[in-house]
Length: 166
Image (tube, rainbow, N blue to C red; front, side):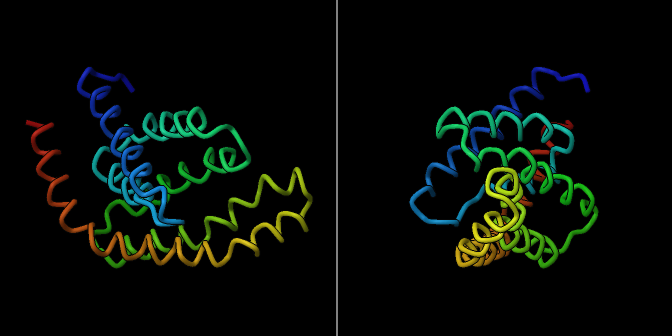
């Protein structure tokens, strides 16, 4: 994929939006807009998300350190983009809210994978079970955020996409 100056600018803006929203909401445990933006950016800007996610993950590691949480980011955010891409033809807010909610609910389960290497299967299992209340908050938060923001942001994204195509 050959990147134009417009693509590079757009990728930078997408990363900035994700980072600013993440920092803005950092004091609210497990309520985040990262899931929402990765899904919306995948839907509207397609393959450019393949550059956004690694840049986002690298910036996160540089800002907060490269811990076990960072390892899970390497596969969880691309997984979300892949699932979004597979359902890209769906135009139902309920479908997108459900996918976002399930992603939040399962975040800890899939995030436990690196702990299998460091702590064994029982350590990973206990890490996951310990975080289930936070995963529930994460899932509900993602669902509500998608229900509230999907339609208005979709309208804006359609306008931006039309401007980029013109």
